Length: 124
Image (tube, rainbow, N blue to C red; front, side):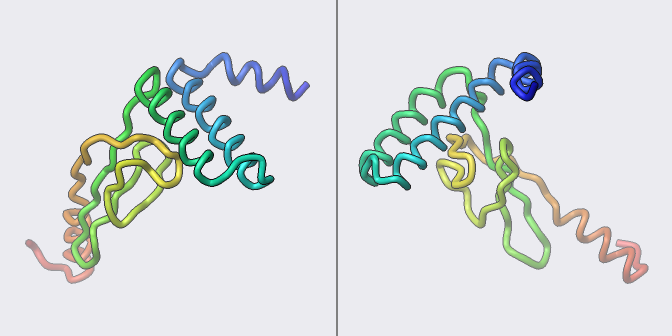
């Protein structure tokens, strides 16, 4: 029964989503091989790099960092694919291993100023 439900869910995925799911499965398999000592760290890193090269360029939408600028704290970068938050824009997301494009700017600090203004009851 679970297989039928999973099969129906799979059919509803777009081509890009299917490729991303396959990528995640392959990545998990590599991690499992490494954990059980079936491959070395160097083999894992090479295979993961090759996987990113092959699957990242074909059928997978290129993701980007969404740069969220803040008023009173450091900027954060959010992965557009998995939602992971990082302190700087890496070339590859450490969470989902997506190859990243140019960051997109999101001025979150504007909302923070409005919130501060409401608290202080000032008109800016």
